[in-house]
Length: 128
Image (cartoon, rainbow, N blue to C red; front, side, top):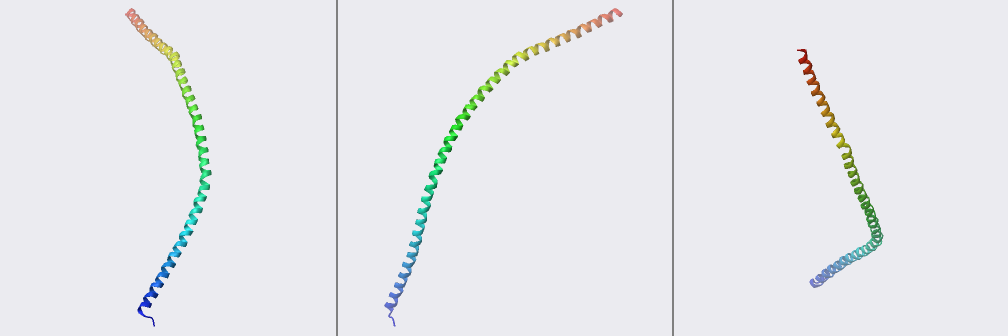
């Protein structure tokens, strides 16, 4: 039979063996995790470089298009300014005479009505 010290030593040895086995499993899994992480990082690096090149090209093209849009916007602004000037000139040339013509026709109508009324009064006085 085993003595108490031998049993205690056997329990300690078994606990130690279980602990070492557990740590070995953990270390193996950790090594696998680090290996997979290294693979993912290298694959990511391979994918990121072309993506960054594409982004750089896209930003360059966008800047080129923005320059073109700015030129178009400047042209539109210039054309709208010219259109406003033409509109002002047209308004001055057309509305001024139209207003004068309307005022003249109103004055003539008013004068004719007034003359018609005074002629009607004179005729009525003569009839009496």
